[in-house]
Length: 209
Image (cartoon, rainbow, N blue to C red; front, side):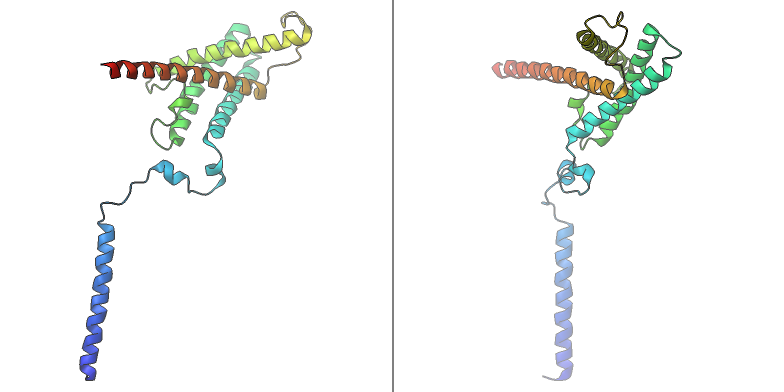
């Protein structure tokens, strides 16, 4: 075989090689049977400490931190200017506004898919009037928190906190935040159980039909 024919043969092989590679790339690009991977599945393989911390730990910390912050800024900050009922109303408003505009929005921002974190939120409605529902809900939580402090201090001193000379367990951000988070999760758990019971009953009725 002459050198010219050998050169032509090598050029043809090289051309066929590149044509084969190009076809393979086009088939991969145009493939329609590629599996769809959800964002939740992708999160499992992401590195970093924040992705290794369980979701429930992060959510509980957010609720605890904001509850303690409201105690610090509203209860301690306004204690010199407001007293008794006025102070409790200010705390309720602060907790409700913070929950609606900060906590719930933060959880919705962090959720892998829309609605995944609704089970961690009491008021899942996304309307302008949801802030009023959160204020009312915060009033319920605050009532139970105040009663808890009252019961604990009464058990320790043997007399009502209103008549006691000293308060063994005063209100401070850490314990307040823990109580706020605890009662919040308790009521959310009850709500989820009630919703689940209604849905199960609805399914049974629809299956009978």
